[in-house]
Image (cartoon, rainbow, N blue to C red):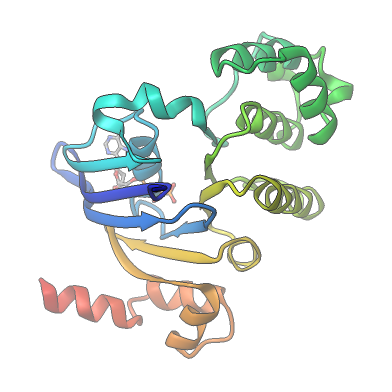
Length: 253
Ligand code: ATP
């Protein structure tokens, strides 16, 4: 039987006195594109970092593709990948050296062939020989996505995949992600502040507030539930405390 792509149960992360993630539980079925939304400091990046095994939870459990990430993450990591505008690739290495390094790290079989394929797909061929530190923000994002797809991940975690991109490049990235998902059936979890992006890419959304799930649903369902026109308005309701989820949380103490 296929396990869900991601199973998070009663996940908690404390940084000293700050509770960044608080009793967070959710399941992501295989092949879903799940949006993780929430205002600044809601706990999205902390959650993604724990899913990747970069941060150790204070409590709770995480399974990815059925594998316990706290005990056995090295079995799951080759089938996962991620990209974040906040994690830079080594600056002095050229783009080719970077991609070659990550391809080997992830155990890609035909490294040269995959490099050609991914350079073509992500349109990074013209700057393969340039140091990664000397690229524009848009070029860096394309390289980061090339790295994120190098091992054809089954589970892809993206932290704000189109942050600081011009609208045209951002649109191109969204199309690329949609195509990758359709071709491979991969599961994608993406944190985003861009509600148009969420409406276009995500078939399911978790809205986080203060480290907890505030609301969950498909964008059209959330829009209907909040009586709004789009996800931008839904997000503003949540941020300004007008959602029904907040009342439920407050009542629950
Ligand atoms: P943003 O949208 O601003 O990226 P986020 O939803 O990703 O926010 P997190 O970065 O996960 O939020 O932060 C959640 C909480 O944990 C915040 O209160 C933040 O200040 C705190 N926090 C995050 N990282 C650390 C850290 N290394 N040490 C202490 N506190 C931290």
